[in-house]
Length: 158
Image (cartoon, rainbow, N blue to C red; front, side):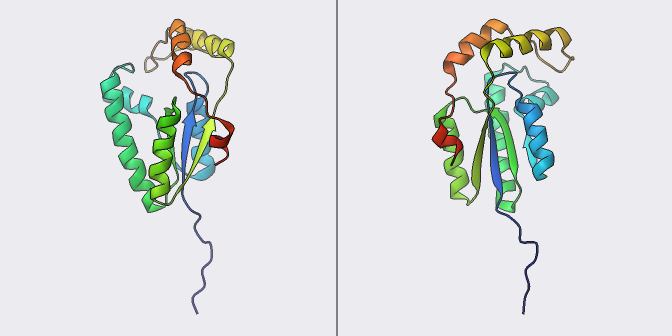
């Protein structure tokens, strides 16, 4: 008779959703420890590779490579955390559909921070920033907020 103890749980894909300075990296690092997960941060990779954080072509390539790696890790049974920001429902749905296709759950973690607090954090970050942290134009936040589609309740509870 075969006894199965310590059954491994189904892996999860964690999508960290929020605008700049909403706390995505801090939250993702907490999840990383809690779930012994693999955390993939486009900003960290862009920095390590020497790319400008605002180079959209480089960002798309890094995010694409991270997504390929994430799928391989999920198939292996590892939890994966992606810090892309996931500004659109279409993007979140696309990742969720692929994850469902390989048999893993997707959890969206929405960091909903008021605009005034985000601007305050950006100002503080720009003053105290380290060499590996890009300066963020606070005026850009207003533009980005118009492009951001917050997840609806049904997206968060799936």
